[in-house]
Figure 1 (cartoon, protein in one colour):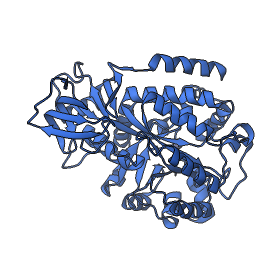
Figure 2 (spheres, helix red, strand yellow):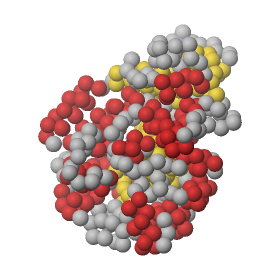
Figure 3 (cartoon, helix red, strand yellow):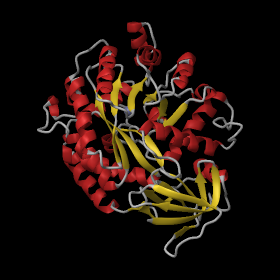
Length: 457
Ligand SMILES: [Zn+2]
């Protein structure tokens, strides 16, 4: 058992001082004692502020290696769609070894930023031209192994991708690595769930790529199929990221994408809707009431010129939200949370927007909101320092100008809005120190593998 004495720590009902935390051999919290701390001699005393680790609810790990390579004008009007063409070219040469190395590097960077778990939205399944690997789980296994080896907790989500676009469009040559029959994907999910059922840090989810890539008929049939295998885990889907998608959907079905999805499928708290950037007021209200979580990825949505999610309308209906670093143009949870608020300030000409009467601190509202949504979105006992939850925690560097003499919610406000360097000092995942003094325990060897992989690309 590991025992920690925290001088200042964020618990589910607020900040507390001198708290004793007990963690069992499996990495779960088995005791949280306030006020009456009576430590054993080997208790670890932490004077710096401790907060729960954050969930990264949307990741395409391999895209990290192309971050920064798409910032030059191509001569045409660049958009999400021209970026997507570059991404398709980029992934042509990704082999299992290269995928492992890139994802491992990505996960090291996530951990150093304070993300202790990740939902990996995994749509790269096959070899070039769609040729299957001997084991069709090959790339999933590499991605999960990268998470295990870097000690991030993962909800791995094999993605169903059937069509090249709306109206059952035939997939392009460059999309063949993503394509599966629905039954095959359900079988892959079932096999992976069996394989990792005893591994606490690995959960297997399911994802539909988008309404473009999977027709409503197929989503309905697959949803039934998932029920027949008693599937209870999270389901994710990209919706309404781009205006072109909204227009195409409306032209074909007379409904906007979020509306179309909500009208046809029983969307509930198991679902995460990724982006929903262009949902209108009615869609936002119904999305919030469905109890699904919306995963917002502010740095990617800014980088790709997607747009700004109508967060204030969504919060009016107490909508659940989580954050994701998606394309990994930035792996920095401070930046995601900061820009979630700043986007709203820029379009409303007002300040201090994401908050409530009970929680007037914007930093605390953002951080605690994303923790709650992250727990739902990843389908794990994470995001709370509480008995029964995984011991995933961040220790912030209190010995810095930004945090000097800051306490309680001022810590979160100062970290999120005024720190310009990474203040994540230690990261504990499942009770284990994975980042110590700002260094990941395997960072040199993982970086070496990454360098070799990039040389091959
Ligand atoms: Zn995505």
